[in-house]
Length: 448
Image (cartoon, rainbow, N blue to C red):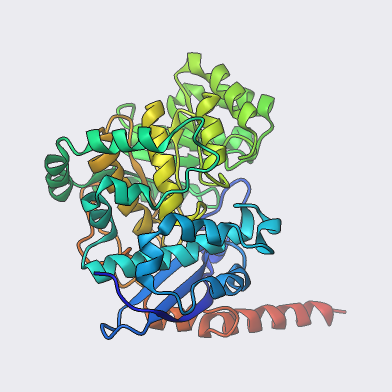
């Protein structure tokens, strides 16, 4: 039973210097430092449980979280979750902050961090991992968490209820299957754009040895280099394994078609984020042009909200839908997208590259399979082997599959020692790095 009045909300800016090793590098983000706005909410309940939430970002979202804090402070957690749709709309309809969005950008990222913490606390108080909380939830209760505004032309609440009702058939067997076998994953860790050929080969060899059969490679900076790297990877993994391409929004529409056609010889399953994430008709044009080659379009990690996903589905602009556990407005909005994807019968293959994203999105994809899609055809979840050691309940991968977490909560809780060490700019790691950068800059200024 959920209980307690929210007495405190804190947020910290936690950044990891992944750019030093080229981790996370792609054609658009050449030197990213993976970061998170990390939120903790506390209540006056005697159980002492805390709700932990985060949003993955390469920027600073903490200020926006603080701007939303007054919506939570002194609220009873029971009142929030018993009318979650209204609370969600309250956050996304803040009279001042909505002007910055609406439901997009830094404010929406902050909303995700705050609500992820609420869901974490709710699941902890119920003594269940989040995926199990969702799977066990009565359909009407689950639907009361979703804001259907702006999507009823595609999915009504009544249609969503029918999807969930049908999803209860065989869900116990699917849950047992997931507990025994896990959810299929693919790896992005082998082929960041900043990796050398030697590292790429080494990581591919290790991944193959560990049972990985699905690999994604970053492309988009240089065509000839892409051809060379794709050939290297395809030769490494063989013709029987699956290859995906990710351009990270680098191209114009005609360029995306032409470039991908020249990489078609390597038999990629999809081209991911080929152009601007806001260009729905552009994605549709790319998808139509590449369909004869058997190459699908995958996108979604940078989609602002459920409305963009709605239009991508309506326009037949994607063949693989990639939800993100932090870009959208937390679990609430992701639930609406999962249900729309089911109506259109488009497979969901979540984005999970970034600090904490694997930990979070595993819960959503398990719920999707057990209670919504009931299918694993053309479905897999991204996995990136970075930064899991900083979490209290890190993701577990066995035989290239996500094993369902069993600890209560949303797997969002970070280790306090990691937060202190990597907090920006006062953590031990950043003090040293920033001091070194200043020394280098000073030496260059004084160079005769």
